[in-house]
Image 1 (cartoon, rainbow, N blue to C red):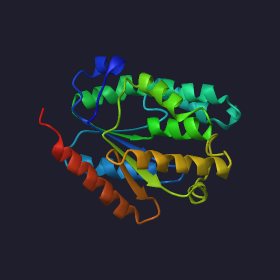
Image 2 (cartoon, rainbow, N blue to C red):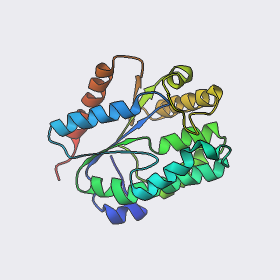
Image 3 (cartoon, rainbow, N blue to C red):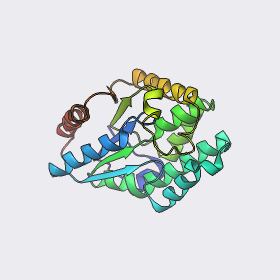
Image 4 (cartoon, rainbow, N blue to C red):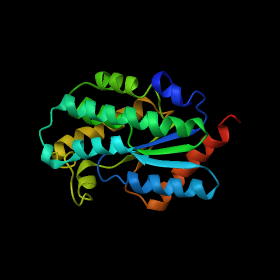
Length: 222
């Protein structure tokens, strides 16, 4: 279940919503599937907060502009990891934790596991180091469900029209990211729903919705 501690707990002392994160390599369809899930849950009467990382608040969006801008190619890997963590800390404190505290379903396009895969593994900073930084940044807030949309790096990159700074990295870099996500999902099967991102869009959406609905039914009544 969702847990909130440290600074995040100050904003949401009794987190009782549902937190869903979408992860995967570039071009996996995360934004599309996150939107479809949000639309379905809203139609069913749930309060839904749909957001993204980096971003979600004005300050976090400003950090997004820096970390993804191609003009900053060659940004130091540690600086990159810290920018993502800073954006995430703001995102959790100002948007995610308060929404969970009032019982909303929060759906985010990327979360901590993206930093572990991209900066921790592909950049070589170490998954444990990056994980600990983000554990502190988020007040230990973890998703109830992480949906991994799994697509091979080459296939995903072929879907990208105007690549940002990270999307412009070589295919070999993205192949490492894809393998890192797979390892994360394999190591935490209870939290992950891993789905191939090459099937029919509506079939993928139905599988995700079914899993989320089961989690919603299992939620304790406030």
